[in-house]
Image 1 (cartoon, rainbow, N blue to C red):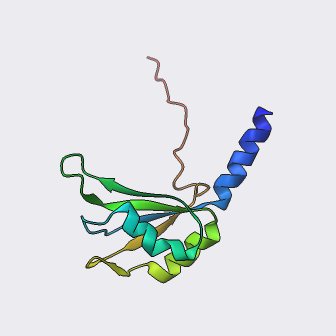
Image 2: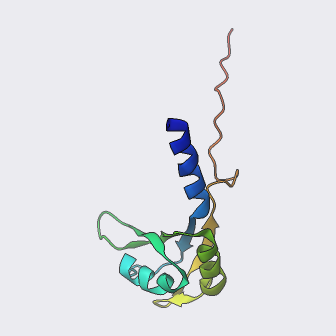
Length: 112
């Protein structure tokens, strides 16, 4: 069953679509991002990365849609759109993109 669960999880990851959202104003909240992205489809999660000291936005965050095609629609419509006087820059984050995967290489051991 463990392998079947892992396969189901991997298929679900492929279905979802996450957007990396940069260029956010320091006053942007998860609620505001949710309000701007919800019309494109069901959203699984919204996260604005914040500073520990001031609790204001670091200027970037993530919006994860239930379906990848909804993330793609949002990307086409909202990329470089203004939100609270700054332009958002969106990047579709695909979990299967080999560039984004950390390479698992064995460390070479040098023997003298």
